[in-house]
Image 1 (spheres, helix red, strand yellow):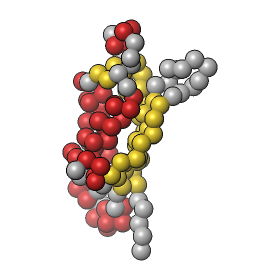
Image 2: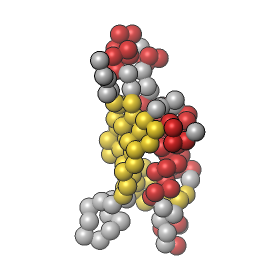
Image 3: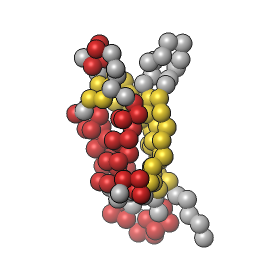
Image 4: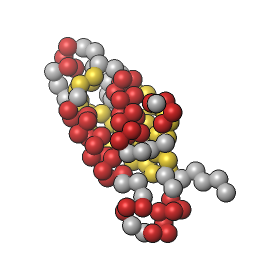
Length: 123
């Protein structure tokens, strides 16, 4: 049986410093982040205990801290660093990550990047 279980967090809104312009480097802007990670829901459901699953609250809290403590010029770099951190720190094999800056582009609701990475990408 092929299992393709995922845990997801959608539209996490955090204030962070990201941008190439001088004014962007001096302020905190809203950043929207969504992610999916691989997860064995079948095994976790049998135990019904937090220790048997992937704790998305802990992962999300670490992502928030990372955003608040770091500064980046590019959304691309920002996304790579978060993907690498989640994979390495939480023993995740796969992540799909969407990072955007709402309102960054005039006449557009949102702009950003979507990446997919595996643990093999960071060996």
